[in-house]
Length: 491
Image (tube, rainbow, N blue to C red):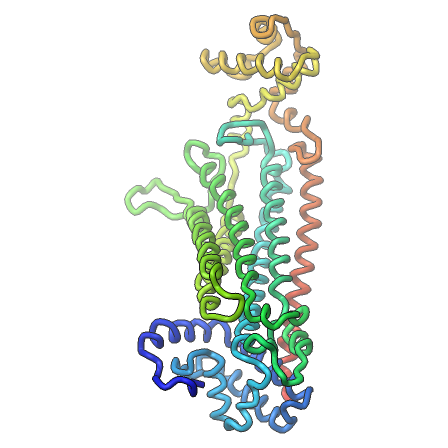
């Protein structure tokens, strides 16, 4: 393999490049690379490039290596990569005349490009499974919270009354879009580079579509250069993961703030919390902190991969290998975060009484009071806004509660602010300032009224079921393909 080179590999190259990568590949890639070998061999035999007799010998040897498992494979870093260590084990069993035929019609460039895509799609489907699980847990709470009134916030200030279900519907909508981005990433990943060779294909009459089908890919990549050079799917998958983690981080931040003593409207379970080493009263929501921090790691992985790729020529180079440096770590961080978030969501306890009480005290209902003035007094919203703005300012200054607002207060203030007395009905004021009625008035598409949120959740449930069916279809396909390759004893 190093026939062109006269010097042995330096200890630095072995210890700082090859050995760490080799050990990582042994754990991550053994199963998929053995599947690639088997799929490629089946195709070589079917095309008559490898004889049936030699093919069976190679098959039996590969089966022996596979049965012994990755841990039993003796790694020699001087062979540089996992494939060549497997090939060495193969040749040790059947000899170079037979075992050396397995690499016909391919290069390690297209082999590893294929392996990276197979590893990526496995990891991506795992992430999809965790996103589904999280959506299911959030949906359970949402369906039971259609009438749980709370304050909605803008600029982290009380804005208008909503329901917990309305808020969670927003989170579920974001996670639905995340899943769609993962489907798109999966579709970009799930095409086969195998048979593209080093970059210019091969003169052997191979069948790339056959290996593509055997390995569960949608089809073979159209251009041999693109097959070995393309890593935009890495950036696409990292972008999708980065957006997901950003959404999880924002959800975590809300729960984090709401769990403080100052808010006190949600509590995480003891199983996902930690105590202080010195302050015995502390209950720290550590899972939320880790999720927020891990979001930063995934963002960094996207920046790292982009930086590695941006000045590479459109062909094969070791820069491409470096672009995966934090790619696999990103999958691990996202997987961990989704498990942590799902575990946390399962334990959440909301203080519904306190949530409702806040909406009665924090003036979040007065936007609807302005709407009521517009409807009953037939004036512009801007004038109504001025009246209510002065009203709130005066009441806060004088420490007068919202419940003290009546038609007389509005009449006196409207004359002062706009020079016109506004007379509101008692029922109109009550309906506007009652958080529960306030919420139910907002039944337009996307609003917090219970009937409208129920409609949103029905649609989100339908989308979730559709996504689950897509996921099961992909999982079943790969399971069947792998089983077929594993069970092919006689090729």
